[in-house]
Image (cartoon, rainbow, N blue to C red; front, side, top):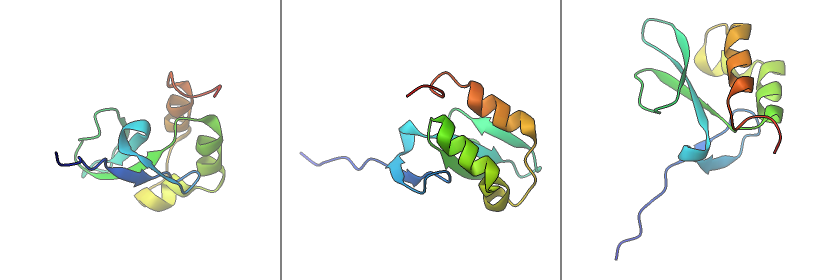
Length: 90
């Protein structure tokens, strides 16, 4: 049997490679809108974050999402990221 490859992506918070399914994707659409992509298939430039508060706070403090997406990120995106069920206590 052939072993199936598991896609890996780098978290912009901790800079560690992790399974794509374990990360949350933030995407900038071709129209310039910033959204959280739960499907992982939306069209546009994507950035991945680990599901923990430390990575979100580090990305926010060092403006890593803004640099990767080349667009200012509003506080509402960070608040949505912190409210996701998997975030918080780990």
